[in-house]
Image 1 (cartoon, helix red, strand yellow):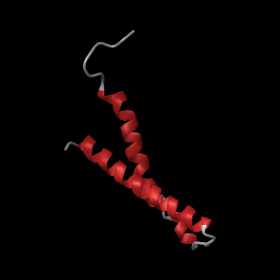
Image 2 (image 1 turned 180 degrees about the horizontal axis):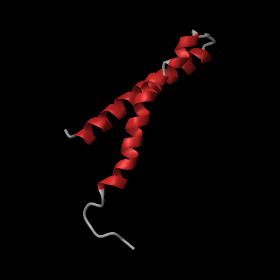
Image 3 (image 1 turned 60 degrees about the horizontal axis):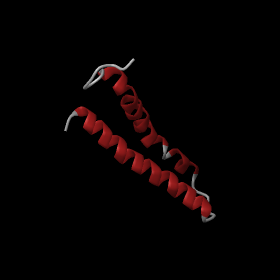
Image 4 (image 1 turned 180 degrees about the vertical axis):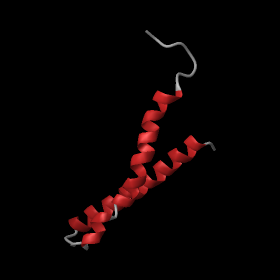
Length: 73
């Protein structure tokens, strides 16, 4: 697997972790529990990975050039 594949895999798995953490916080609030203050900072760790990998995947098509065909006018 090349670098792009690894970045996509990391982004997928970390986004799953981020979603589970946020859903867990909302579930705790829905059950009437008041989590400790530090619990609200847990989504920031996966988000710190998601932002650079997401930006990389967003700008990749702009810097890789066109593949397979002429540019349409």
